[in-house]
Amino acid sequence: MALFGFGQKEDKEVLEQKKAGWDLASAKIKTWMFILAIVAEVALIVYLARQYGAFGEMIPLGDKVAVVDFNKPVTQAFVNEVIEHMDKVKKDNAYSEVLFIMNSPGGSPTASEELSEYLKDYHKEKNVTMYIQSVAASGGYYIASAIKPLIANKNAMVGSIGVILPHYSVEKLAEKVGIEEDDLSSGEYKKPISFFKKVEEKERAYLKKQLLTPTYNNFIDSVAQNRGVKRATLLPYTEGKIYVANDSSIQGVLVDEVLVLHRLKERIKKRIDKKIQFVDIMPTDEIGFLKDKIEFKFSIDSGFDEGLR
Image (cartoon, rainbow, N blue to C red; front, top):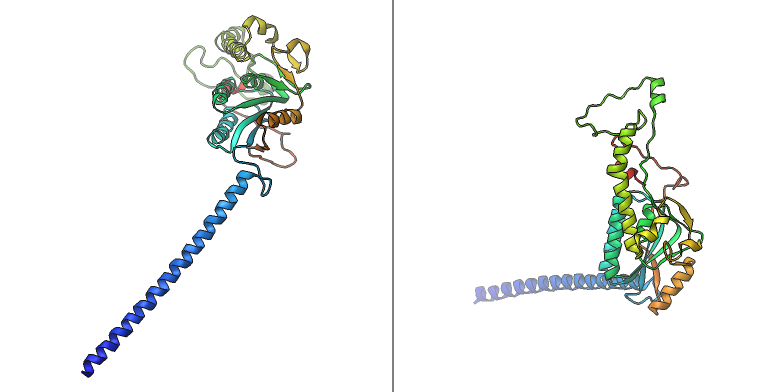
């Protein structure tokens, strides 16, 4: 009997220990669930705050306008960056449309074509408003022409429809310092230009026929199509000339309307008919007081495409 009583006492102690362990585990689980609930709630609050604007502006979902400031020369790298950010906006229902501000002197013809066509397709899914603030020249205008109506600051520079392949000859300098070019190539036209000599007439005619003229014609045809004008109507403005946006001769051809940016934004707000905010979606890359003052560009390749303007 004594042994039986001892066993009961032992079993009771084991059960109490197990119960205490269960209670401790349960308390830990409840604590973690509480912490997770708090974290989830904070995350939700932060998300809603971002969607509604800067913590208290109460901007409803779907009432943001993405602002793209295209403020660099047209290169494929920059175009890819712009497309990447605009793709994110397309998928984000917090943004109702896009305000594209053009501030570019031009650049690569292929990159200009890529972004021009991208904007036209994008415009079918999410509205794009195009505004020329300071300059839309050459490739910059190529891109801007993709969206109608084309609105500009009256002092903005537009046009420069043409193609150029920059070339510099260091032949005389090379002779003075004793530098000679000694490369190897197969094919008569494999290397039509060199930094160490002037372009000869034969190579000049070849480059113009095979590269510059076809690219120039593509430029004209694309802008004419984008602007909805006949090629013959556009041709007088395709001689590489630059125009001030309020020039009466280009109204309806190169530009549709002149306006300042803040009034354009007010127009967008009125059209959407809701309280909205304009959000700059392009990252800034400040590099100190030399920003936009110095550009280094060197290539051992011919760089035909990036060199065309």
